[in-house]
Length: 287
Image 1 (spheres, rainbow, N blue to C red):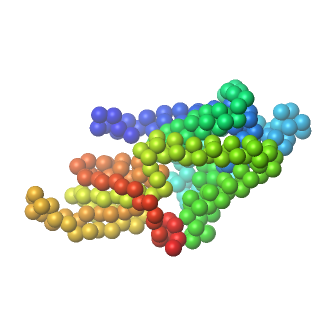
Image 2: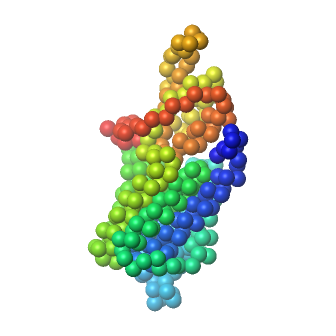
Image 3: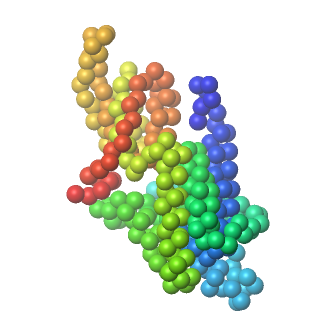
């Protein structure tokens, strides 16, 4: 992230820490307090706490379940995809776990609709901040990335939707249909708000890059992001010079990283970003 054109590395970590704090507030003070399961490992943690209530005080704390689920997942992901793949997700997960452990739980409202709105807004902003910081919080994001390596005919988004949907369905049987319906409202709001925070990104973005260093940028896209990229012959009508314009399609979480890397390689590069509303092919939706 940059201020006045200069990269300020610590802002990314501040965004991740603040974002996970907002997420933890939504989880503890909204969703857990109201018995709403919105998917993900946080949803599983709420279920585990409910199932163990009476057996272990008020139930196994949310942060314990979150940590227990993520530790083997990170070890597996590091082994399969390498530590570079998981290092920022590790920061996000540790930060979220600490927030879940230290934050007190406030019951913000007894109205389920208000809880869904407050929780969806807080978690959506939190997730948006974490993504802007270039991180994730592990959980179903990381699990879906691992599964997709072996089921590559499905996209990561499709696998995440299935896992989160299954968690919500279990929550419906534990807490009732009414709360599950309100949880769906919260999930919808989380998606919309987080997308709005990171410049309204959809699942995919089409990116055109005009640079004097096309080979270096293309290598970065293929190696760092593991995405394909196409060179298109173009001509600058003002300068009259031939250029190689690059074109690629990336996921919303990858866009921030892509722009920063392009700036590092060529700060004068011209980058155009547009919505790719439907993408077929490897790494995206299958035909």
